Length: 53
Image (cartoon, rainbow, N blue to C red; front, top):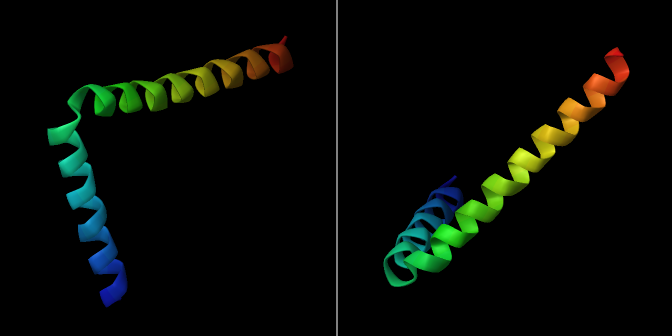
């Protein structure tokens, strides 16, 4: 349990450091993740449209 807590704090610290030192790159990374999620949702919608028709 203690290791998980330390790793969580380290990950949060790394994200905060990344946001403050390279905000443009952090924004691009978030946009990439969101684009991937949206693409996956579109593919699922296409699949279910094909199944239901």
